[in-house]
Amino acid sequence: MLGNFSYHNPTKLYFGDDSLKYLRDELKNYGQNVLLVYGGGSIKKTGLYDEIVGILAECAKNVAEVSGVMPNPTVEKLREGVAVARENKVDFILAVGGGSVCDYSKAVSVSVNCSDDPWDKYYIRFEEPDCEIVPVGCVLTMAGTGSEMNGGAVITNHEAKLKIGHVFGDDVMPKFSILNPRYTMTLPKYQMCAGIYDIMNHICEQYFSGEDDNTSDYISEGLMRGLITASKKAVADPQDYEARSNIMWTATWALNTLVSRGKTTDWMVHMLGQAVGAYTDATHGMTLAAVSLAYYRYIMPYGLKKFARFATQVWGISPGSKSDEQLAKEGLDAMESWMKQIGLVMNIKDLGATEEMIEGIADATLILKGGYKVLDRDEIVNILRQSM
Image (cartoon, rainbow, N blue to C red; front, side, top):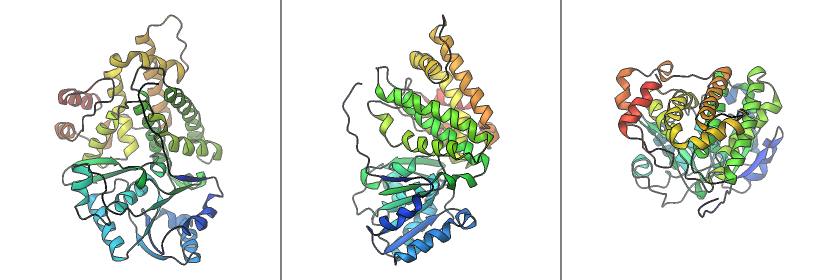
């Protein structure tokens, strides 16, 4: 492994179908005024809302709520949550939902005591918090984003047509997260599959960088192989607890900073996908799936050895006497077949993107430098057109 790095992750995890019982113990460590954050109301249909409200009552917490957090949380919704938190003087935020609810809660946590506009400070100037941060805990109901064990918070500004993520430091990471795979079984298949690809792409974004012999890459290959196996089982039987538990655990380790150690990391698929999402409001994992293959096939010649390794170590393709180029192509073909098998959207047109949007989406795409090829705007336009 090359370079120097530090690793610290302060989030405590409770995993399994008994994990909610630990919420009582954790709540004792935080203040009396709790902001309960959740999405469209599915937790009320499943009974999870009543369970959590009951636990909060047992712990004598004063509870304010922010509901209706959308899959791509907006800056307007962020400001609404900040206002509710300030009015109720909250000293703890409990996020119950998927990655968007967790992301949103972290964005609120750094904004409650912030004197600046949070969009300008955190998403335009990319400054770090210089105010008191309200602690966050998560009860996860969807596997995919890894938001339960990282400092990431993605917010969408429809007026500016921008969807931007800010990865905050250790102080913003959830203090604890409760992961019960059974909570993910109520998701529609479309959402489950989108989450699966989000996990896969998180690993790929870190894997497709660097050329040294790196322990992080070996870990990534194991995570990807396990995810592929579990995804096929979960698509065949969404109630397969073992498969869903493996997907949930892989999602956490895909983006809790472990496999990024010693890596430059890429993240251009996320930049492309988030720009598409800003224009279409499409499901995050599906925007990644729709742009991935065009991007990877374009940059493949610049990272040929890693793409050849991807083919043999992740997809099990026998090297024989094949060239690295042939192996790399077969690896991406195998990835495409798997993506179709589990039901992913394979082009941005099916997500609502039009030819007229391409130039604007390109303008909204942030260009990063950690991968095998630093793109220019013309290359981004070309990749987006290939993704149509």
